[in-house]
Length: 357
Ligand code: NAD
Picture (tube, rainbow, N blue to C red):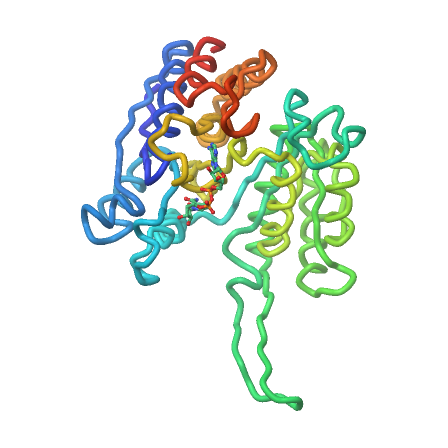
């Protein structure tokens, strides 16, 4: 089968880490008999340099014509002083909107071989943990009516949280489907003791749970969830939550793994096409030095296989290869502290992963 993948390498370490993921996908293609075709497009600072804009129309058209999109990272000091509309980061919002992406999937996995990187106590993370946050991306308080007005005590500001049945149902379905592809456990996080939007959210999640009898479903209040993530992260498999709660909890979850260079993400919409990218930025401090950890991008490519192409065995193969390389003690500098003599380079780490596939 042939799959067309748009490559948005971007800036800083973007090109190095995307090229690592391409090598991994090519090896998977050979092993399992798939034809992955890659077409590069400009995004971010490099696009500004060549075309004057961070997200050229050609890039949007190319992504829309592809089966899926792999992104490195954008931005860097060279473009920091440009005005808001032509900043590299503007391209990220633009491409998500153009592709109609309303779901953000953020796995947070602590490998048992990397548990010393976690800021959590050893007895809490001795088994490692592996959870997935499904965050609603285009609704809620970040997109609601807002403004300023004169109130009884002077100036007031307000932001409004609104969620429709359609928005809750579609994110809920993604979450239940995601749970079906994992350990079949789902926790929906809300603030239903206070917020009306959360009460509607909870009602609809309960309705949906009837369609997924195999999924063990429960609700949790967001304040409790913030505590449970640091007290016992192993209890979670899939978490579904609103835009703002997801924004906060997904950063908390990534911090407790302690390894920014390891964390993948996916943004999905109504079609199988998704945008897959590491959660980290363009790391200008190490760009072009062959020091970047390519694992977050390699794991993003594995998510693409799993969620856009339904290639479960192939995705498992990449994830197991990464596991094995870490078990064998190979570490890029970010995983053992910069300057360590034992660190492997970005290309060496890629080579080790390829050997394990
Ligand atoms: P960053 O994630 O780029 O870097 C933070 C620290 O983590 C740096 O020390 C960096 O060297 C290290 N790091 C990040 N990824 C790594 C990897 N794969 N391997 C090894 N070390 C890694 O965040 P920042 O420094 O705040 O931002 C740098 C630039 O990236 C800025 O221009 C910012 O706007 C942009 N940014 C882009 C995205 C994106 O494209 N999605 C996300 C965040 C930041």
